[in-house]
Amino acid sequence: MTRQIATNRPPKITRLVDATHQRSLAISRAYWAKPTKS
Image (cartoon, rainbow, N blue to C red; front, side, top):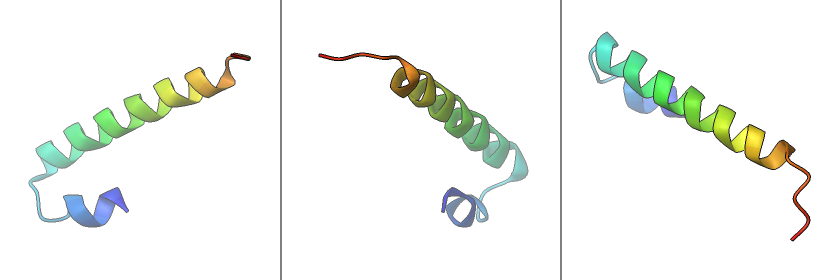
């Protein structure tokens, strides 16, 4: 999904977007992995 949008951009920007996307994914995954029962 993100890849198709990034195809129009230069590789450097695509890598930056990918890195940001991976980082947010890791953060959200770590957040949901926490046993938070509010």
